[in-house]
Image (tube, helix red, strand yellow):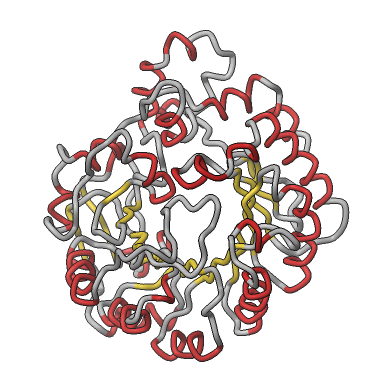
Length: 415
């Protein structure tokens, strides 16, 4: 098909198949025709398979959340200028990047937010998603985004009706988040909600899911609050162990499937629920065949890049504050072009992308060699391995060991 020939890549890490544009990012027929009219019938890029960039355009934030992995807040000043973003997006386009997730901090605080959206659009890349706390989201901004020609997903956090203000350290944050969620749905945007799950928010999860489903949110994601610099300072008494987390996931799953629903529900590292489907999708990474062990240990980092508000590159923004304790720098887009970084297979970021499941199994042979699940386990999240007892990206992710050895794998097969 002609559409499948729009974009191709070479030098893909460990056999990741070439994909057409429609496999990589959601794009409308109108946007496709626009790209075709501009002459982009086929482009070939010699780089890693990185079609998407998470771009932290500012570290400034109007909240001061207990867990923030970016350590963002009102006192932060780090922010990419429009001129710097112009260069970054030029480099990204040349490197074959197809779309951006705009995040922060609070991205709507950036004085040039709409100019950034327009700039990316005019360079024939898409805005895939906007991550916002919703405080500044208004009808005028959403209308202008559509007028530019973009239709991103809108992702907002709501960590529990009745506790959100406390968790976000701001009175009125909950009311603002609910107002923004309802506005996004009403305006026709695909709307996501993210919910942090810990001992503080847990009692409020059920009511929150009922609310989100009732207003037409497309998808909600429950994520165990993980270690970050901010969370270590503020919330360790509220941590859920992996076993506690999985037990709660089972209870919440039973509650959610107890009646008819429309909203999709993902649990980090556990299960993805489509209430309209007969079978649900297991979330932990699994090895499906012998060839699977040649793929990268992190399928997310193998095909995305994260850039913070200082221009620093990370494999994943969610572990950015923690990874700095173990690693000086993966590179900076203010100093080197994105394409040059990605074409250099000796760069730290490409080495991170290229570690395979086979390498990880060999590294953990003493533990994994005698495990009855080693043939289907892909090792879990390397970020959790880095902050775990091994302090190594190839090390053990204890969440996956708990998942298999404590019987949760068998339990969710019955769902």
